[in-house]
Amino acid sequence: METCEICGKATDKIFFARIEEANMWVCTSCSRGKKILKSVDLSEKKKAMSFSKEKEEEEIVEHFGERIRKARETLGLPLSVLAERISEKESTLDRIEKEKGLPTETLRKKLEKELGIKLSIKSMGSDYSGGYGKKEPLTLGDAAFTKLAKKDEGE
Image (tube, rainbow, N blue to C red):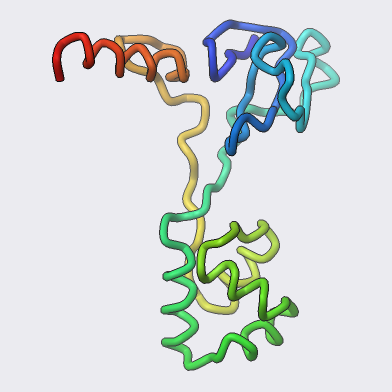
């Protein structure tokens, strides 16, 4: 059984869906009308052995564009030279440096290797426990409840 990241409901059929600008693991109800990127039926456990929600995922660091630009300038590389060295378009690298888009995983790895920097961090994963003494992960509903509770207290 997996838990929906929006409503917290336990479900055997879970979807990886694009909601607003975030990718989330959601139940059937919360996935309606959303762009489904992947679905997994956990009742067929043997077929889903390769699926692991607990797998550590890497997230891009904050201010990644500035980090890339500083590393490039420290090495004395013009943007055009860096683009040529890693076989990417100069306009793509310019857009990434200005943080107008996220680099793909492939581009991120090329930049990390060429510039000798780290652009990703490990995400919390699903073993993160939410507030209120819960053992389950924090859901969006929990966050909304916290905000409402603080508002009621006059904070």
